[in-house]
Image 1: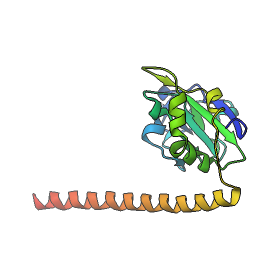
Image 2: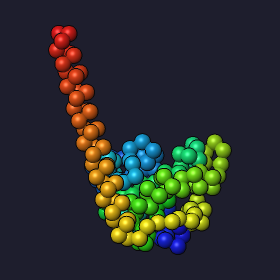
Image 3: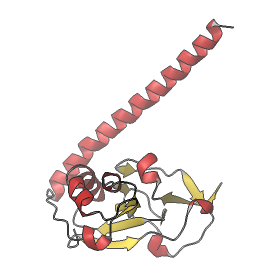
Length: 182
């Protein structure tokens, strides 16, 4: 993995830096709860100012540096937005040989077991960029990457549409039940 790009550590920001408006930013803990393999919108904002090193470039892959279990930290998200502050305990991977979305899928579904095995610690588990650099990855050529990304994007859109439909139908059901018992 070290031959495919480089790593940067996330900006030294925390939950205390959250504000109503400002620059969008991602905290490492949100990789477990808020974001999937591909990030196309960001929930949090901050007024904090950081060096441009910590601002996302389209295709950056973020991997937590710590978590509660080895399996938990073997997660990754590809940020498809520019200028998002990448904060907290994050390893930020920047490369140009493999599309960040493909890298995210590979890290989450192919080499996640390898990441879990190289994680260190008991009560809090850590993973260092220097260890991630040693991972060996097999990846498809650019044309195949584009085909896979197109297919997975269609699936993501379908899942999002179905989740929106489910939320709408759940709200409708709740409203109808309330009317029934009035």
